[in-house]
Length: 56
Image (cartoon, rainbow, N blue to C red; front, side):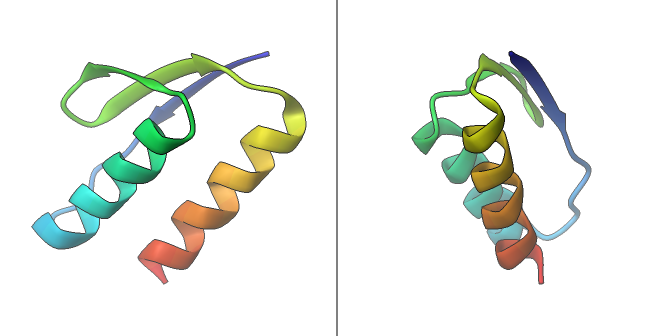
């Protein structure tokens, strides 16, 4: 299942952490703040939970 993750985060540190989380989970960067990849439903849930923890 494909996942398109796009975000607009003004804080550089948080934006870098979210980008790293995306890359660590196998997503490919298609633009500066946009990532795309094929992930199972469980992996999608994992990355979304990780992003939520990072953002707070």
